[in-house]
Length: 149
Image (cartoon, rainbow, N blue to C red):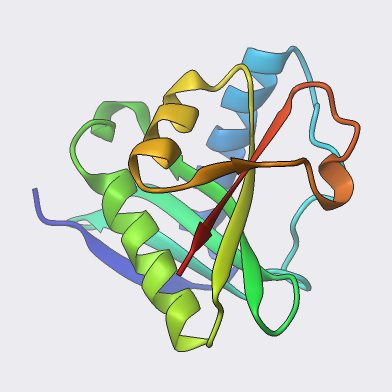
């Protein structure tokens, strides 16, 4: 499958639908809104991308700058019927390449213990476990990872 990854605004309709689907899945896994800290917004997301299969949006992901040298992966998501097809890897590689062009040396992320598929994916892609950081400190279900770029 050929996927095209396009930079979009946070408020882009495809972006909004994918993020809503991601949040619905997270809520189902954790039994409600369990996100520690403030939710990402147009004001704090540095860049956001949507992956398309033809004209169909099938995945998304964004970056939030934490300082001038590193950022955080936010709202990585692939629709269920496109999982296992390489979409998540394509999005992640695109995000990492974008981070490098910004001069970032490290990306961090938060996922959770109820997302073993995400944990396996990030570990396979070279992310290593780190202590909880920022808003996630003290969050009993959070797991945090980093990758040096």
